[in-house]
Amino acid sequence: MKSFAIFLTFSVLFQASLANCEESKKEELERKAAVAKAKAEELNAKSDKSFNDQPAWQTVTNRQNYYSFQRFLQACNYQFRVPEKTALFVTAGFPRSEFGFYRVIPPTDPNRPGIIAVSDESNFESVNDTIASIRRATSAILLARGMRKHYETRRASSILVARPDNKIDDGIKEANHRLSQLPYISAAKAMMSAEASNDLGSLERAASGGRGWRQFEGSLMNTQNEAYQSISQSAVDAQETVINRIKEFAFNKGADLEKRAEDVGKPIDLVAFEIDIYHYWPCGVYYFVKTAEGRTYFLYNVGKSYRDPDEDFLPRFVYASFNVSILTHYEETGKITEKDLFELGQRNFIFPVKEGGIFYISELWPESTRKKAKEELTKLYKTRGFLTIQDLHKWLK
Image 1 (cartoon, rainbow, N blue to C red):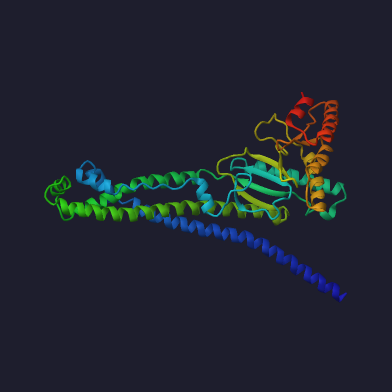
Image 2: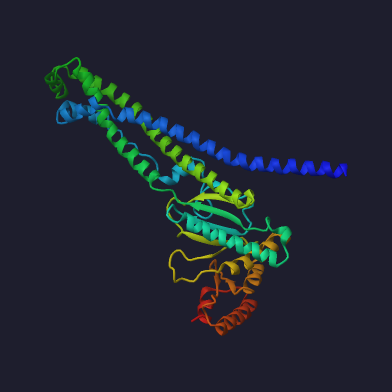
């Protein structure tokens, strides 16, 4: 009895330790987001102070048509731009994944079959509801098959994909606009400095090669060097500002998704997070299977079609049955071969094709058509070893 009590105490402490680890992961993401936000705001305040120099802009307005000002502007004309989003996300520490997204939280087991859920702010809750519905269906299938002991663990990995709002794009545009205007500010400051010891007429004569031209040319050299240092540093700061805004978004969203996974009892090690910056994939839920032969197959419209309400989709209980069969085989053998994928899929009228898609023969088809197509496609697969999209079209006219 004493040993049992010790074991029970150890188990409770171990579970608490795991909970703390999961919580600390969320807290770490929140901390990183806060640090990134603070840094971005610090750099943005520095940029505001430099860019909103009212005396300099007043000089631009009053002196921009004078030749001496144009000479200063020519000396300050250094054009820098913030890099493209692709480079910014990689520099921020989010490498591009095999699916074309940018990875924030990598999957623990990248070969495990799972879902890819793509959403933006407008349909995040709807996609989340679809995920919840297929999770409930999976729970029901596990219980129906007498797999209660696998209730929490025999789950698909989840790669949750978010689309950032326009704030990052707007930040890049604003940064590039400011960088394009900085030569005017540098030129204005040089003009103001020159006018402090020379009248405007003298500056115009010197700029045109008249009396004082040597001193003027020397001041141009100094202005050129100072402008380069100032504008190039502003470009570095602008890039860092955007990068920190990217980190703030990524880490905040990652922390939120970790919390949601924790709330529904999803094992944290089955949750990954990526960002779709160019909207490569339509919003919705996809299922993927990586085979031992090195190919990845995708099944679209799991639980719902987000592109077209009239488009076929994979019903949640069909998904759940297929998913549990796939994961059971994966956990027992450590792999899914292409033959395994076919055999496990055809039981649910699901067929992989060599083009990389996985297709479901919907219940909207007459039952006689479904059965005939399944029979003929199975014969063809056993004869040839693969199917094509054209094969499906032949039997589903």
